[in-house]
Image (cartoon, rainbow, N blue to C red; front, side, top):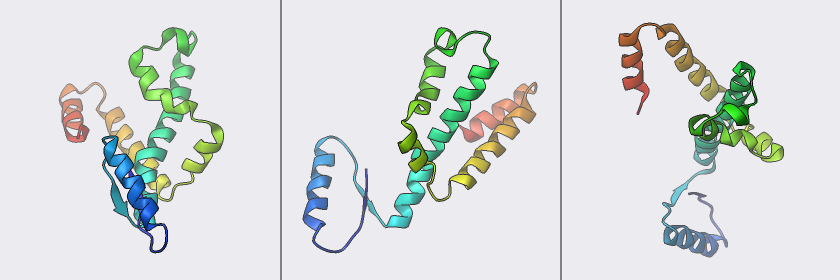
Length: 130
């Protein structure tokens, strides 16, 4: 979990929250507010935006209902699309998200261009797998 560094009377509460997170097996990383917002864009907002788009595209491609056709991969990849609207809107307001979406689009375009070329697909998969 991320904890935004602040000065002042909330330090004891931050320490307590940090201990609770550690006790639950989490990792606590303190950072400034700008870093926190950038991380939220990358690890929360981008997966949410991707899931919303993926669910929409899959549903448009299917001749039957998503729930009847989708296996575990499609369900897992689109689960975030069910995020409550108010929370989704707040997350999608994360600074830097537009650039992340553009970067995702660029990778998808590379994958699209490599379709039909097994060697090119293998190179891209190995490069981007992480």
